[in-house]
Length: 294
Image 1 (cartoon, rainbow, N blue to C red):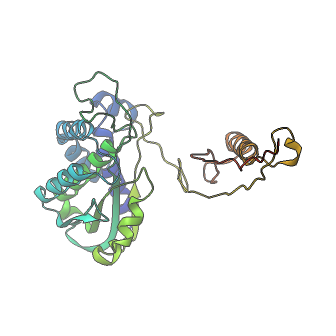
Image 2 (cartoon, rainbow, N blue to C red):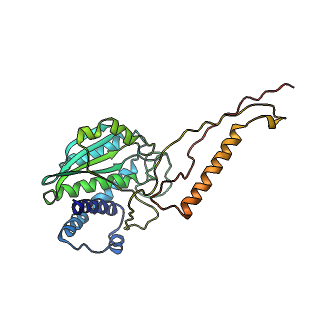
């Protein structure tokens, strides 16, 4: 099973590389495939290069915000049906897409997940495939991720007699607002399509050269969570601040006390596998009423 899972990972990663890197970049940053299986995978992937690049640029030109991924979901579903995937379903958790690709024989289930939503950012680059939706851009690389999903599905379909088991392809909406996975699970993702034995997800990384793959066991890169903290103050007269408790000042001190120490620990000594709070994403405050008895 471990060897077959590694082969599937190789397919996913090759699809990711080919959707963004040139042949020279890929060739310059990894060794030649050794086994016949690796050679078959590499050859199948190489034939898809022009198609994957074109598809990635199409997604980039038509970005959609979280929970608005109507076109993206439709295109993903159409492509999956065209290559012969089974049980292609849309509307899972609103705009989620799920499909199954079955190998030549029964076996374990592996989920391959790609997020589909874009960010509310205006693209300023002057490229032929720049965003056509004002104020929306694939600035986090989800166009690459969705293209990787389709490339993986295509190669798996071409090589299905060479592997056994089932691959669950998941197009996830609303990742940027941390709602998409929850919505798909609430829509009975696993009871409808099966519970995977393993799950694979990749993310592009602007800090690595094109054609290079980074990996690490356990936690890696960033996650998102939230905590609500209520700081209560006490109003008073502006001429007597010693009798008041200003919640805005307390909140500012709270943020300053939390973030720098955590960030410093993470930079200097925390291994990548250890979760750590790194930033304060949002905050709001209302001053307590000020009493005046002039």
